[in-house]
Length: 439
Image (cartoon, rainbow, N blue to C red):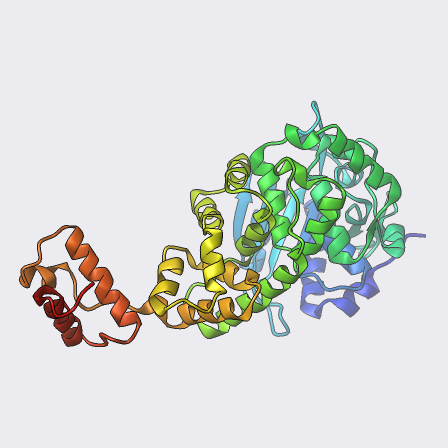
């Protein structure tokens, strides 16, 4: 007798989402196809968790079906012909968090790998083909939404059993050879769900690592999986597990996690939350970039640059990470010394992007450094002089090194509260030009 999850659906999901899913099943049947809920939606449903990212697989043309449903549901649509998929973006359908729902529709497909670690060839298939191409048993379940069998669980590989055992298991021995990025996903699901990688699956991971399967995949695919790790709620747990499984050496040979990785990660979350409240009108720095800086903090600058290049990170992300790596240890020690003036703090931190400043704030070992950095973020970074090169030129100062030196001195005095107005700034310039003040 097939397991029926219809009751669980009604207990976990808002009624309007259940009705929406049933409607899609009916329309698929009317078009001569069968439709199923798949992926993480089903996994979370079996676990009694609500998941509003609805993944639906149909056994025929998903794009054509999605276009029909877009009209029925008054939804906007994005189509991806290369992959035979489409996404519906629904308008709000009620209260209790059901607004802004998206529904991903895919065509049932079969995948074959001609070579290890390359993207597969894809062809149309049936429900069993589609589930067999999944990464782990817990993600290889489906729930029928067709009339007459609505809520019936399709579980050919024992996903529900493995959820009960709280284990991560691959579907077949060649899984990590076909797609080594699944190794990252195994760690992510293990840490996110509080499960354990099953013994046989762990052995397969170690074999794939030993055979250097990561070297066979593109930097872009490797980067995407690493960013997905950074976007986990507690990525440091994934870092630690990846280190245990010897995965991180494929980011850079000899790579190690810094000893206080867990402490810094926790501080990063607190400090980014503080920043969002303290500076609500500013763009919030990407949390995942801070985690990337932490992940790379055990590498030399040269090794980090090579790793970022291998992973094909954008110029912007690379520049931010390398800016943080470029801060000399002497300057980091000065931040913790208690001997810096406002101008000294400004000189160290002003050249850095805010992401790097925030990372220094989170990774600072002492309260003095955090005090200095907070003062910079709250006050010093906004300080600008009202006197510019044109004003100095009117006072007879020619463009050149001396003008630059004068402007820096005006800024220094302003940071220290000694030139709070434009009149005081100009007065300082006149005193320097006359010899009454020295730079």
